[in-house]
Length: 196
Image 1 (cartoon, rainbow, N blue to C red):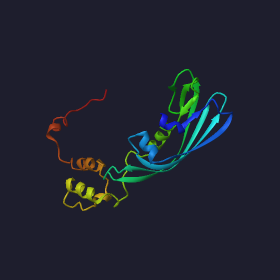
Image 2: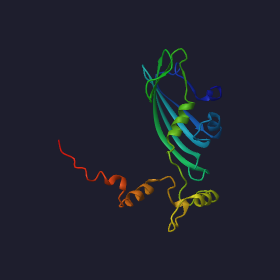
Image 3: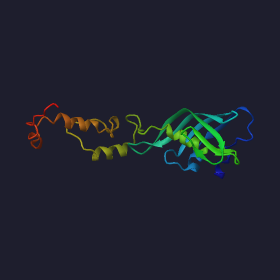
Image 4: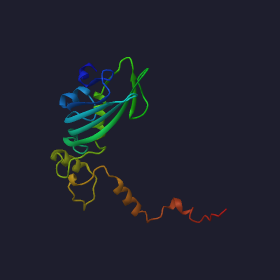
């Protein structure tokens, strides 16, 4: 993590009280960290570190925007990032994670590098499904999707205005067309169950 030395905070040298650190996560940061979710963006980060007698409380405030590929057309789209996260750091014998918010770092090192935590906080703000607003997807990809999409004759909706991943409509159609009896189940209809 030598390339992320800017994001190292020496906890042993922090005097009691609150200390503030500011960072800008830009394209170079996201490319260097080599995460799967984000490759470009600009996010301003303010980190407040409160030195208590037993632990260090980190409050991360992130605000900015990142570019991620659209789930529908694969073109980049911009997503706003605005979050606040908390992390408690304690000194101990060896590195361990007690929970999502509490970690222990070796006391002899007394230093924490927050680069990966910053990336994770950004990535956690990205919704599972992220698509362009209606009409904003890449036209070439939209036409290819429309060409290969199974649809009924009366379906004239634009591919950009509909939800490609929502399969609940298909399920409800199957349920509504189940008025016709399945002969495999007809034998069970005559069974009388007794209440015990």
